[in-house]
Length: 184
Image (cartoon, rainbow, N blue to C red; front, side, top):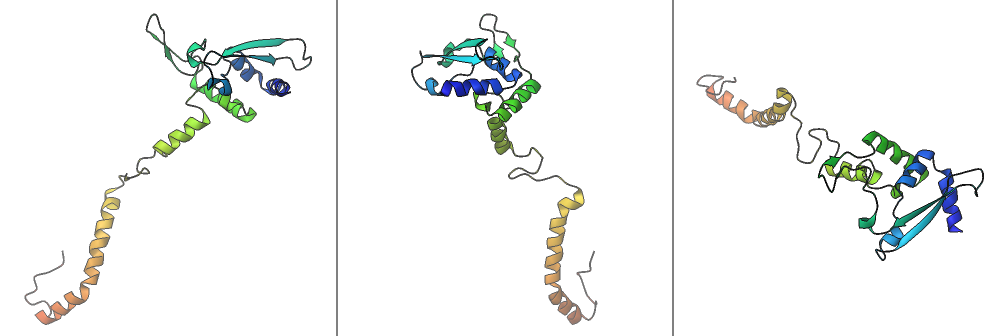
């Protein structure tokens, strides 16, 4: 009964995602935690009109080391030549696949990609908005008057608090005779 639901789900997926899963089948999460030598066979029906016409048999080994392909979303080093090969899917195509998979509820079946929702959320929490001055302990540079305004306002506040004492001194000195604290 559960396999019929999976077949129905596979029939409702867009052709792009079906082609991706046919070429790079997802590793089953339940058997990945069990014995490394277990093999799972999945049957996908790609025809929506007649369920008996075409079936694809996909055999997936559960151990990550025996997967016949590398992650198509990441660059990899050729084992013989040692040269790096670009990812098979560009960042734009990765984003398109992730968006389609998210809308169809199968995003967790895709291999790791930096365009995935979990990775995007993790990066946003780690780096913030990436606007200078919005992170913890950062300051926005600002104009000179903006940077010095805080100090000037504090100095002005202290001067206003000391004003009654200054007025008293002014009156005692004889209204400016012998006054040394002329304002600048």
